[in-house]
Image 1 (cartoon, rainbow, N blue to C red):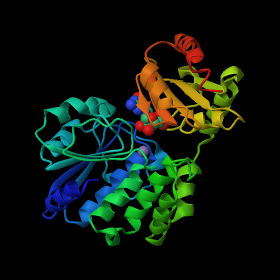
Image 2: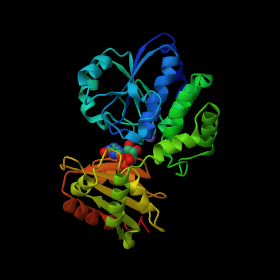
Image 3: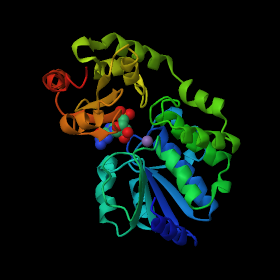
Image 4: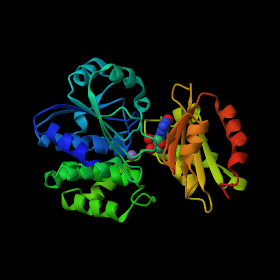
Length: 337
Ligand code: 5GP
Ligand code: MN
């Protein structure tokens, strides 16, 4: 973050303000962790703070301190709009474009309010007055830690803040294994543990809270996995009927796509999941090394993300979507060798 922006925002935060914080739609551990971590910090400074999520998120994220204060825009639209309208500043966390909050976008664009973006995705849009964007960061939660540090307030980080930030860094780094994990990430994690984050409890709360339905659905996904050896890639499909058979709940398919990358030599893994309403297919892409799934998602699947983790969607049915994949793959064959 630039010096003058830090100075400006410090000055702005020197008197009590009304602040809203928005994570991206279908928030993940990093989006919720960064939003709640920042909320706890700003409340400690004496501000009035609300976290407004575009929509619901999985149960395995609902144990975080402050979770019951999160407002869901899709359930409580009028209430959320009143809070947003009265805000002096709106933080947008863990996303790079207002299109990532879909239904909230038009309302936010109609407001006369300043935005502060903190995010680690590529190609950030320019809607914010204060922009802290760094694609080298492992997680937005790591950036919230830095942001608090820039404001000279590391001693304000208590167990609640540390817990939320730990959870987001842990989930976005695949438990500290992705290449975005640096020695600095580990130093920050060490400090968060010193400040009260209980690492074993956080891992258990997120990873050991599966339902039997979810594990059966994972069995279906692994059974459906297709290995395209010529492209060093795999893809997985899950239909609406398969989801329904196993009482699908939000978040149940989280992490499934990563299993594809565990096959020796595989560089690209994609999962195609029919949306609950059946009108589009949600796509998650993961890669290893320098194969950019961000580029693939942007170019072919109306999405984006990072080099090694991206998402998108297809408005065609499953069969046509897979046909499209097979059509584009030859263009990537060289890169995937
Ligand atoms: P996931 O596959 O877990 O949904 O998302 C992986 C990464 O891609 C995340 O960083 C997420 O923000 C990004 N992403 C997921 N879906 C979309 C999408 O539809 N559009 C864009 N631009 N990014 C996405
Ligand atoms: Mn993130």
